[in-house]
Image (cartoon, rainbow, N blue to C red; front, top):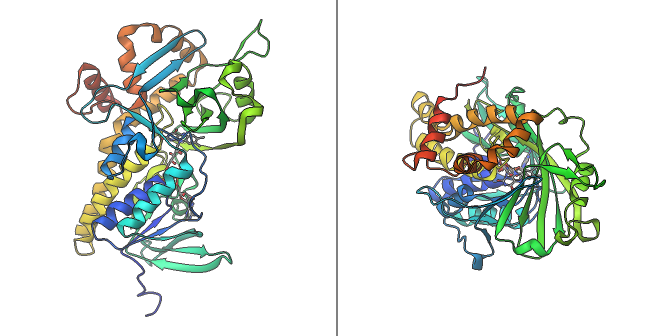
Length: 427
Ligand SMILES: Cc1cc2nc3c(=O)[nH]c(=O)nc-3n(C[C@H](O)[C@H](O)[C@H](O)COP(=O)(O)OP(=O)(O)OC[C@H]3O[C@@H](n4cnc5c(N)ncnc54)[C@H](O)[C@@H]3O)c2cc1C
C-alpha cells in the first residue's frame, strides 16, 4: 500500500489527557478503531489543581468509573470561600444534572486511570509519540499526522479520515493548520505546589478570592490573583493560584514568588511552608472562553484545552474537556456511519454546534465576568459587599462553579441559564 492509501485507524486522537482518553473510550466502546497518540509515558505528572466540581464527577460517572472513596477518590462536600475577613462554607447544590459531591485526585493517578479505561475499551495507545503536525491533502483536509516516536524519536506518519486534537494548551496540531487563538478571549496562568498539611482531609475545597501578603502584619497588602487549596486525603494539599489576562499584573508577575508571598502569610498550622513542600512549583496557561475556534474544520476536531474550553469563571477545565469528548464521540460515530462527503460533514458540524449549545452562552457570560473582575475595584466591591448579601450567594456560587441545571431547576438556575442565553457574542 502506498502512503496515500495508507489508513492506520478510523480516528486518530492526539493527546491522552482527560479529553483524549475520554473520547477514545467512547469511540472504542462504539466499535470505532482508535489510535491514541501520547507524547509522555503513564503514569506521569500533569500540573493541575487536581480538583473536580460535581460537573466533572458527572463525567466520570457517565464513563462508568467508580467515584467512591473506596476507589481512591477524595470527596468534597462543598466549597469554602475566603476573603480577607469573611469565610463562607457552601455545600454543593442538590441538582438534577450533577451529583452533590466533588472529587480530588492527583493528575498522576487520574490521567493514568482514564488512559487505562480507554485501552480497556479497545483504543490503541501509543505512548512516547509526539505529534509534530497535521498531514493535509490537496484540498487542505486533515488526513493524518506526522509524529516522532520512541526513545530514538523516529519519524512516522499515521493516517485516518478523522483527527481529534486533544493536545492541550499548546494546541500544536491546530496551529499546524493555521487555527490560532483569539487574543480577545481571556487567558489564565496558574501555578501550584503540594504541601504536607493537617488540612489534607478537610471536607471542603477552598477558593481564596483575596490573596494577602502579611509579611508586614501592620500593613497587609492585597496581592493580585485568586488561590485554591484542594485536599488530597493522603497527607497533602494541592495549593495554587491563578490570574486572568484581564488583570493589569498578568504579564509582569513572578507567579512563583507570588505563591510564596501569599502562603507565608497563611496560618502556620496550615503547613503551607517551604519545609512541608513536596516537589517544585509547576505552572501552565489556561486557555479560556473558546479562545480557539472553529472547533471543527476539514477533518480536524478540537477538544478541551486545545479548543480553549477552560471556564473563565473558575479555571476549571477537566469537566469541559470530558464534556467536549462526549459530544465529539457522538458526532464522530454518526459521521463515520455516513458516506464520505457532504452528509458526513453535516454530522461533524454537529460537534461545534453541540459544544456551543452546552457551553457557549455560559462562557460568553464568563468572558464578561473575567473582564470585570480583572479590575481590582470591581473585585474588591464584589468580595466586600456582594458576598455579604445572602440572597446573592446561590447565584454567585452556582454561577462560578457551573453547577446549575441548564434546563428546569430553581429560580437561580433559570436566571443563570437565561443570562447565558442573553449574553451576546463578543466581536
Ligand atoms: C496550575 C493549574 C491548575 C489547574 N487546576 C484545575 C482544577 O483543579 N480543575 C480543573 O478542572 N482544571 C484545572 N486546570 C485546567 C486543566 O488542567 C485542563 O483544563 C485540563 O487538563 C484539560 O484537559 P485536556 O485533555 O484538554 O488537556 P491536557 O490535560 O493538557 O492533556 C493533553 C495531553 O496531550 C499530550 N500532548 C500534548 N502535546 C502533544 C503532542 N504534540 N503529541 C502527543 N501528545 C501531546 C499531553 O502530554 C497530555 O497528556 C488547571 C490548570 C493549571 C495549569
